[in-house]
Image (cartoon, rainbow over all chains, first blue to last red; front, top):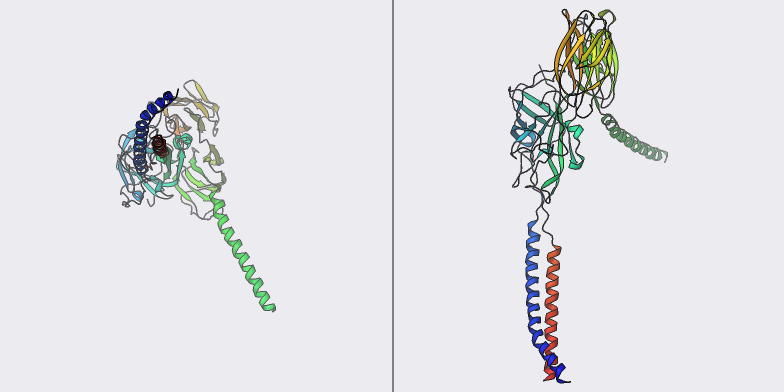
Length: 225
Length: 286
């Protein structure tokens, strides 16, 4: 009667000590690994790249297009975009629609694109030009678009060498779920321009920005003859 | 005593005046900015009226905002974006000085977000300036079209396109309402009593047009005015224009790591205490 529990206890004691030692070792190992993980996790975050100031470019030279007549004057297709105040000078590629019916993003992050379904820049209506804010690695062609201010000039060079000169009227940011389709793509009575890029917070789960930055501009009046 | 009191009163009055002026100074530009802008364009649609100079004045300003020289039959100016408010449109003969009494003038009240065509219409003998209100939005995927009958030779003109009558027996100076059409190539036919005219136009979706029937030598001429033009297809939703290479990136989640570290330490501590406790009874037993 007395030896049995004694034997039982001694057997348990034999098993327990290595187990306790093993738990101790595993616990210390887990704590060590976790502290290392903590250190890595706290280092992987970063702040947004500051936009800074671009070196302003000189205004391009050329024949400035006059306001389009409602009886329709031919307007040549757009080939280049120049925004001196934010240092943008790029060729313009052509953008269509994605299979889901959204605006097709330019294939290159360093070139802007004119949406071919919108009026040509300088014709009656709002011409739409889109460009990436960034690539996976760094700034894109429209990285500094949000720095544009009312009155800044935007130049579109057309295939015939003429320049459509626009003046920024406003710069606004919208959640993509509340994109102002009518204001960007809807009918407009004058020659206008909409520049579109991304902005706001980046959603790492979907790989997309949550907002769009839109610059509204109208054709500048031609000075002199 | 009284002098000092007066000086104090004067100082107080100056402060109040200064504040009032300051507040007004802020209030005035804010009020005019909130009024918004509208659009205005000018047209000459009177067949037997020779070319005129058209002046646009903003109400109360003696200098013209724009002057269009030698505007002749059929000419329509581009839209001018103007602050909302009252404007005066005046017509003068091209030889007349800008200070002379205009042949004709009218006032237009431009409301924010609205567009207007001010057209010289009718025969030269009874020329009038009419203010037409232009539409700025069309049903999604559709076209809006209206007709202005500016032919003096034909007293009743019927305008039809692809089986749709845009205007029946339109008299000189008649303006129809806008009608909804499908976009695409449109064959328009204008039929008067003795003359007719036909023309094909491509009408873009999400756009608004005015067709003008005009006198030409021996036939009717149809011209198309672009009122407002939209994108032919409106893309769905926002645009994906970035890959996040410059975006802020949150650090990895810290809480699971913290939890794991705590659990590990707790287990180790427990095991350590267990080890120490069992050693003592073992010594006693010996």
